[in-house]
Amino acid sequence: MNKKNASTMHGCVPDSSPVALLLIDVINDMEFPGGDKLLRHALPAAQKILKLKEQARKHGIPSIYVNDNFGRWRSDFHQQVDRCLGEDLRGSEIARMLVPREEDYFVLKPKHSAFHYTTLDVLFKHVGATTLIITGFA
Image 1 (cartoon, rainbow, N blue to C red):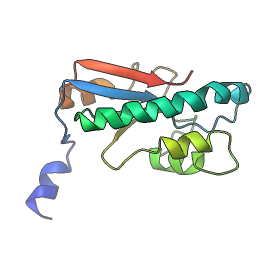
Image 2 (cartoon, one colour):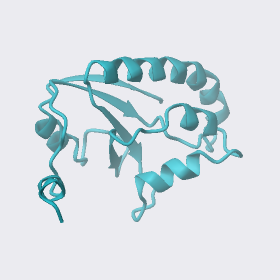
Image 3 (cartoon, rainbow, N blue to C red):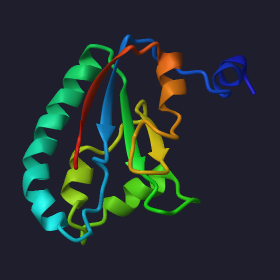
């Protein structure tokens, strides 16, 4: 293992920014009662969120995806993204539009709140974020 890998493999966050962009529940299959109604509003919002994310990246603001674990305690964020990219799901178009980039962060939330019982506070401290731009669905 080289020194670079050793220095970054123990939670070292490469970004340093007083601002962070939170994308809450944007990777979602929308396969729930009322998901079709939410989708009508979420699709135009996703287009604006994509522009916001691109602007944030240009200004060095890190993006942090915060998503449900969908009750799957052995879940993995990348598996959730892959599942939501499925063409036969309501939310697949939005997932393709807002698919996380390699440099993006993600946090799985065990409950409905992005802030309670998650690791966001620790991540904010590592990044140095004291200002949040919050966007997402529902």
